[in-house]
Length: 562
Image (cartoon, rainbow, N blue to C red; front, side, top):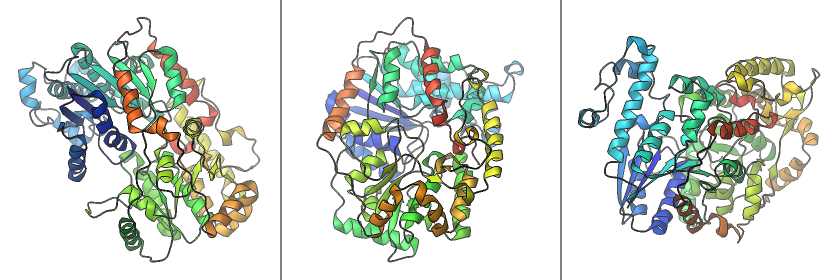
C-alpha cells in the first residue's frame, strides 16, 4: 500500500509538525504501507528530508516537488506569467513529456480566454493535472490513500478540485484535512480565488465540499467538526492534533541553546521569553511584546520564525522597524537563515524563561501543548474555539486571559477610529455582495464617538505601535487597573514564580499518536456513501455565520498593512 501526503509547502510550522509526528503512527496503524510519497509545491531543507525518511522507515520515502501544487498567488508574478507563453517555459522536470504521453494539452493563450489572467489559471490547472497524473500513476482504491492538508484554505483551489477529481476517477480515498479555512479572516483572498477560476461562492463551496464518495473531511477543533457533522455525519470527523509529552531536551542541549540565544541577542544575563511562531498578522506579536515589557521589562522577546510569505512582509518590516527605532528588546525570526547548527524549537523553549501565545486566531494552538511539554510557564490568550477542547483534554492554564484592555490615552483614538472606518469599509467592499449584509460591526466602531478603553487585539498595528511607544511604566499605570490579573502575574514573573501547566494523565487518551492514527484510519475506512442531496453552499454558509460575527473581526486582518 502507498500513502500519499499532499501539502502546498514544507515550511516550518504546525502542519509540517503534524505530518512528521503523525505519519509514523499512521503507518503502524494502517499496516502493509511500503511507500510514502510526500508531494508539495516547495521543498523542505535536506536535513528535514533525511529526518522524515528515517521516521517513515522501513517504508520507502519519495519526495515530489511540483511547483503547481504550491500557493496560486506565488505562481502568478510578472516573471512567471511572461514565461507561460511557451508550453515548456514554466514546466517542471518531466512535465513536457507527460503533456504528450497523457494527451494533456499544453494551454495556449486565446483571444477569447479573457487575457493573460485566464491563460495563467488554465496553465496552472494543466500543470496540476500533470503533477497528479505522475503522483497517482498506478494507484487505485486497493493500494493507495491520499492525505491532503488545508485544501479548504483557498491558496490553490485548482489543486483542490483536480485532486478530488483524480481520486474520484481512481476510486481512491482522499482525506481532506482542514487546519484553516479561506473564509476565516482571509477575505483578502477572495479576488485571487475569483481570478483563479472560481467566480462564485457556490463554485468554491462545491470544490471544497464536493459531493464525491471518496472524500473524507477532518477538522482539528470540535467546534468546526460539529458543524461539518451536521452535513457530513459519516464522512467527517474531529481530529485534534497529536501531541506527546516528549522528554525535555537534555541539559547539555539546553545549555547550548541558551548560549546560542545569548550570542544572537548579544547578552549573557537577560532572560528570554519566546513566541514560537512564524511571523503572521494573526499571531498578534505586538501584544506579546506589550506583555513582556510590562511583566518582565529586562527580558527579550523572540519569535522562532520570520515572515514566510509576501503578504506578511509589510507586517514584519513595520514591527521590526519600530523595534529598532525604539530599541525594544525584540528579535523576530531568530531561527531564520541557512545556519546549520541551530537549536530545535523544543530546545529553545526549554532554554527560555517563559512562552507566549497571543494569537487572535488558531485552529488548534499547538504552542499551548508545547509549553506544557517543555514545562515552561505560558502566558496565553484564551481562544474560544479551542479552549473547550484543551479543557476536555485536561489542561489548565493559570496565566490565560481573554483580552488585554488598553486606555484610550495611549494612542490617537480619533485617528484610529477613522483609520478603522476606512480599512473596514474597504475590506467589506472586498466581500462577496451577499455577505456584506450579514457581517457584524467591529468592536471599536460599535462604540460611541467618545474614547473608551478597549482590547489591544482590536487595534490596527499602527495604534498598537503607538501604545508600545509609550514608556512601559506609564502604559502600565494606566492599564493595570483595567486588567487586575496582570499585577499578580507581574509579581510572579519578577520573582521567578510564573506557574507551569501540568501535563494531565487524561491527555494521552485524546492526543497520543496511537489515538490520532486510530481516528484517521477510522475516517479513511468509513463507508463511501456520499449524500446525493449534499448542499455544499449551505455547509459553507453555516461557517460564514460564525466567521463574520463581531467577535471574529480584527483590524490586523483587514489589510496586509494596517
